[in-house]
Length: 164
Image (tube, rainbow, N blue to C red; front, side, top):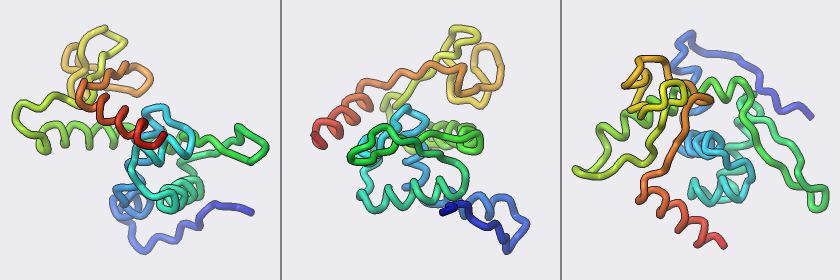
């Protein structure tokens, strides 16, 4: 059975087409978790806060759209891990842009950044991008080392503990 969706655009607008694939906040949160290195369903579900049915539907849709591939990691019962394809990896610049906008416009005064990145290329804080605030190079996922802020690390740990 093929999960590949047929592309039958009703518009030539690339924003509208992209919105068809990733327009749900739950879809973006699933992608966030994959970018953060969570590959198993329970990890993605716990950290995104979506219902199991919602997360399963988003993963299935992302797979059908060619953004995610799944690989079995256990035979009995059959369980899968989810990984970003090249198409999924291409969404990283959008995640960085959403992060920058959220850090700039959606925080309480004095609130720390949720995630700080070090740019491996220059060894300095990367800032909010899309260019490194120190060396000016374009930020790429493989060239960033992320460190969670204390508050965000605690929030994520509490979700893990609550799911256990």
